[in-house]
Image 1 (cartoon, rainbow, N blue to C red):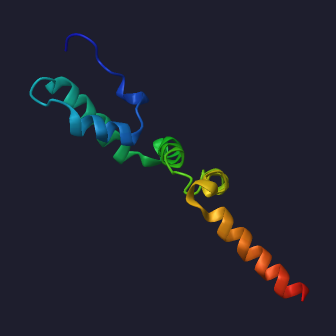
Image 2: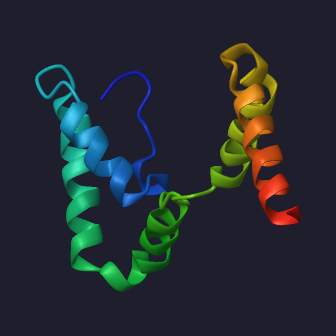
Image 3: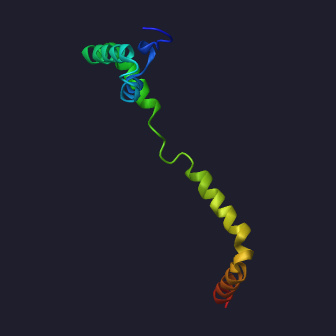
Amino acid sequence: MTGYIPDYTKYSFHELLDAYNHIDKEKYPDRVKLLENEIAERKRNPEKYSQNIQRDFSSQIPIKYNTFLRRFGAGIIDGFVFMPLWGLDSLISEFITSKFILISS
């Protein structure tokens, strides 16, 4: 083994699998062996690494509607800003005044 050798003990299980799937197995057979050993160790003793595995999964769960309100608000504002360009301002004002006239009479 020559050159830089990654410390696979600090990798999450997901990162280990990713490294194993993308490593050049012919160019780095020593690293492949280290990866295989670390993956096997984690599978043999899952309770030892369960906190790391749980933390890794929880950090990668996306918040599904994290930006919904911001995008919705921006859409409403854009609607009001661009309404005169689309000619909808006159339609809406006519609709409001016609409803107001019907209600008041």
